[in-house]
Length: 173
View 1 (spheres, rainbow, N blue to C red):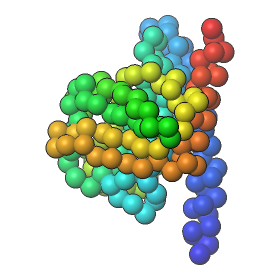
View 2 (view 1 turned 90 degrees about the horizontal axis):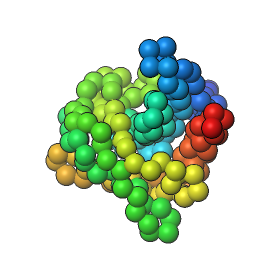
View 3 (view 1 turned 90 degrees about the vertical axis):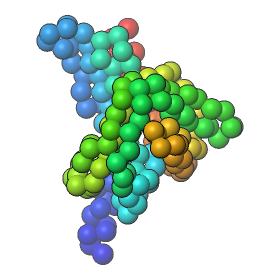
View 4 (view 1 turned 180 degrees about the horizontal axis):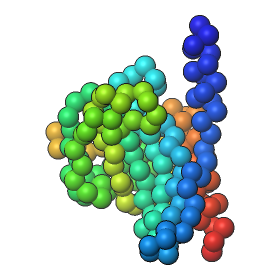
């Protein structure tokens, strides 16, 4: 019971924040990255854990998706990643490069480091997350698509994560 209480406290302390905001010493361009936020799944599910972070590297803005799965999967370059909001509107993003599951690639922290996972870099208009509540995400793999539910609390955390990111972006305009 004590372990469970500590876990709940740890998870609630994992607030949205900027984990990196600096000028790259080689390119002289700004790099901004948020911490990861879980938007689907729980500590007790295996294949339904999805974590998202936002990143800007120079002129390129994208979303990072970590997916802890229980199988070796691949996502093609340009593969569709779609979000559905509470009003039924669809927002489509594209995977930036061919990605195959690797051991530990879909984890954030120590949990699941022995399981296969995907670390995707996704391109699209991330500003849609600022004022929309998302209910679902669909990831197109080479074996077909996989759908995930996003609970309302997680959807609000996703919007808050984007707002933290946008605030850091706006600070330098």
